[in-house]
Image (cartoon, rainbow, N blue to C red; front, side):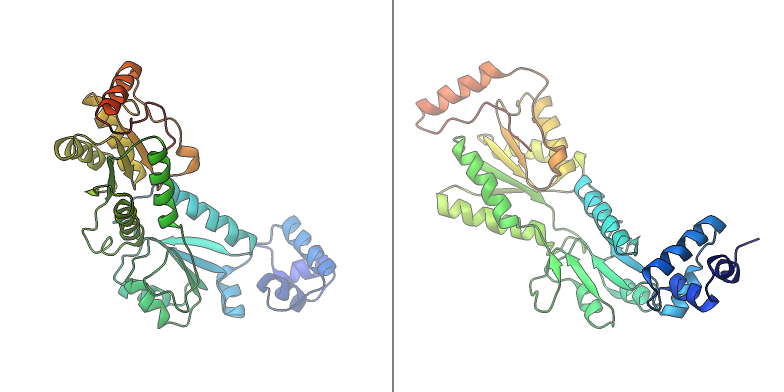
Length: 318
């Protein structure tokens, strides 16, 4: 039989009301008294009734992390965001739930309207995001991982994509690259139209190319290994003199490197590949299983004879 608050109160030597204040976190209780009640609850195996607590406090202690899972794949960097958010929520005595809600805003508005959560954390933000417009109309706190075109009055955290692209371009330029291609994510479909990371990465790349006198070449692929392989074939067919690639997806990067190796283009011996949207722990030496040192040196000598900067024949962090 389940332990009751009355039994906890008797064992702890306090009133039922005081136990209720602790269980529902509805009123302040002296720290030593709270600690004694919590200890007794653990010893007796008392389980909080989440529904009763929510009714009493008018709070669920739940935060929804909204992620359009049916359209966007769960990459390693995404799971890192989610687990970090879960740890932060737990530290604040909240639970985090993931809502695989689409981008049109209506489904999210319906769920939030049921008062199931105390707050919303929004991921995969578009520059013009219908979900943000819906949340603005509702009486619920929310924040963004990413940002919209207009951030007035919004709480958000974001990656500096301008700086990421510039760091990648600077690094590749230092290695002597002048033929640098951006393999960006596809913006086809409702979930990816005006998707902030892709749009801002491409704008930064084109601006940097214009400043440095580099001809911009942008290829697009989806968030899959297969699409990365297709991008490699398109790269070789349409820009065969490319010596470096900046790519904006972890899964596609793996496919790109694998396909380049399959067709005899060594990474980094023949071509350097840098991923700007990947976890640090997923970084490492991007290389073919075959030693192409002689080929890299030959390409460097050929580039110098043509008066061009030599492509780097060494490993690069993804």
